[in-house]
Length: 380
Ligand code: NZQ
Ligand code: ZN
Image 1: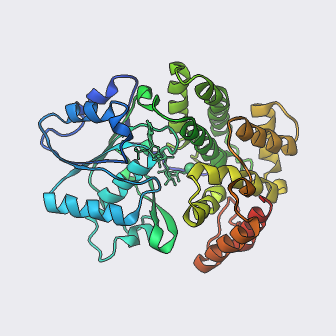
Image 2: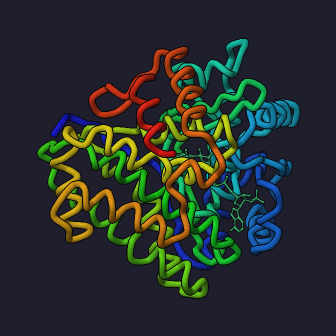
């Protein structure tokens, strides 16, 4: 096991009725920027409950954060923070709203001339941020309990992430009842995103970390159990609650302590979203088994362990097949053809971006432009 520092400062308020608890978590004299998306919070009761919890505090609403949050929109919010002298950012919604809130919180305190530097340097230039609190309504990204944020810039077709300890939420409310309004497509997306967050930290190489392995396998097995139950019976509150908690534990930095991490699937996937507008999780289902096949020998030991413990199959090849069958069973395509996208064209476009940026990813640092091309060519 590699040495590591583990610190997760986010307080989780979990369960039905917990939105009201944030009244005691936001400082009474805070002046709040309240960010949300395109209106889902007006249909699931989150809007009213949040307004009640804010009580007499001064707050400014900033709605309209897009899925795959747009840089220009975030900059408009930063302008509002400065103009209104706000000092707390409250996000209510899915990962996009939470990620936007984190970027706004960091950019509001950033003193350099160009806030894009926050993303270009993946957070290196972030020295402080406004405090962020969240109410999560879509289990998927883990943004509610980590220091990551992913922002898109449509004008340049870029989608970049930054990471900073300064943007871990101070608290996150996870009320599974707020997810009852999610359509099946978004539940399916959330299952796949959380699933791949685990595999990025687990399907690498043996690292002498049996506890992290067992925790990763527990999260995967839970998603396989409760994900389809949530889809089959949207009113199953127990399944919904476990799905929500599993998605948080998939990327709250715990299972990644001291182990090699991959993230090539995510990085290739981000390019597919930037180029073709696919949902984040859709890109992951397309890329994941392509990366695994490309690295079959290097990953064989972990793929066999995953196959044996999670799917009760004996070979790495069967573990791949089981994974694709699982995606299929929850209605998630795993081929580019399903979206009418040419694999040859996507492979060239993504390889070009990788080469231009000099990117290499994966636990061995060998997923470069050529590897990304090969992975996508295999996903026609
Ligand atoms: O905009 P509103 O009206 O709120 O509707 C949203 C949006 O249209 C809707 N929604 C959210 N909660 C709902 C709901 N609809 C009905 N009922 C509810 N309870 O869902 C739609 C999609 O929301 P979005 O926030 O975009 O989805 P998700 O949570 O999957 O977030 C995706 C973004 O997170 C990034 C992705 O790249 C993408 O930009 N990621 C962030 C990560 C992180 N911070 O750690 C890690 C991930 O790997 C990921 O990259
Ligand atoms: Zn993800």
